[in-house]
Image (cartoon, rainbow over all chains, first blue to last red; front, side, top):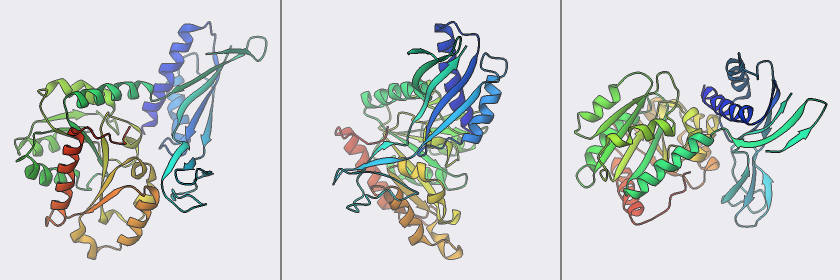
Length: 113
Length: 235
């Protein structure tokens, strides 16, 4: 359940934003979560409900966009999606890959009133 | 941060901030501290019972003759592991997470002043027993090492790929018990290399001592490489 720690990170950022802007309430929070992280959407939703209680984000919608793993082959330079556990270039079969996306844990945007 | 109107009073605020931002900042502080003091920091991760502490006992006694070592023991509640390391006369600090399933960079940074610096050339950080949560938290270490015992089953690398992707070596422990299990060692290693083709795999038994010398030599060389200015991929 390290999603509680991740959600602490979300609320730290949200509080900073609440301090900087005049906001009555937070309507929606959008997260981008890479598939190459161990953050579980269901656990994030639970953690969100716990953290949001009694704050301006109580009742807000949490939207989690899961980001698939994309990589670039260091040998042939081509880009492709990585499915499952096989980190292998489908074009030249080499294994030296640079991960382009799929490792992010980001708060993308807030919708506020 | 940009403000964009989407209605009369509703508006969108673009943020794009890292949830682990605070952790990553402190991890970088820790990493610089280790670098300044020429200390190779290693984050040891594995399931409860994989043999992390036993591997440390077997490894540190062999390495203590030729280098200075210190240990940070992560545990939810107890100091049992730290007591085992202290018996070897190796400086050790216990960090209790109080229910937390992983160490984070603040917990590590907070206890670093308790060691004497410059001091250890090798700092082992034994994480909380867990193959999931510790994978997402950078502690400032130079590298992560997974301890996986063969009795846990050959499906574990495929079930917990992130930690194998983020680590530089795997110690496959309890090799002496392999004949008593259904584990397909070839399949286990095939999955490990599929997830991370550059990972180094050691097959050991902490009970019989099998394979430990090769692993210890690798670690010795790593300390020398780090002190020689090598940059490690872990971040």
